[in-house]
Image (cartoon, rainbow, N blue to C red; front, side, top):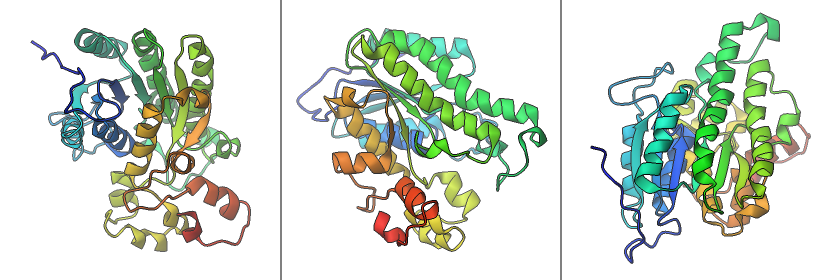
Length: 323
């Protein structure tokens, strides 16, 4: 029998999100994991999903991060605020699995306050650096990328939004790579461009669908994020010595830990006036200035401003000025 979760507010649950129920779809690692942890730190009960568990590894091939571990990290972070993590293995390309997930949340909680569509898992399908024309790229690989980065979000919203919209105040966050402004420029890979621009448009569309129900939809992007794979696969560094990666890629100087976008999400979810952002494309750097939070090291990196003004705009400035 599935254990019922007690999410009632108590005096020993002072977190700003105590009593709130969240679903972070795609929380195995990286931004998704960090966002789930920060929601838990703020007192929320967080359902975390993904395909990699302690007994099964997804096509990405990384067995070192699992959704069970994410749930444990959420609960540990929420020890003083009442936050709890609940791991539910889910393939978001399988509608019946997503239906079962949302029915479970309904059965156990009777509500959903925050939906984070962070499902991706397509980096392993990319060639680095990007190269070749659209017609030179494998069709099956490209379509798989779109399924992972776009269809998963649609399937999840289809089943989760009827639960989220039962009461006003719900928040939907479409996680992507890039802002509406930065993604006006071609992302140098046909399928990647579509996969990362689509969530921005989804948030814009859902904002209109949700407006009269008193709910909010936004898109949210980290900057140059130091995910587990970025650190150990691409740069061969750790979080402790990440600055060594600047020798390989100068823009890595304005990179950020996953904690930064996690704090951005938690700030949004706790904002009683979050509806002012409805339909907008937001970034961790932008929100850090708005809400006053910092990255784990106390800095406020703004990767997208650096890329726009220095890399593409030709401004003479040191990367340190954007931290």
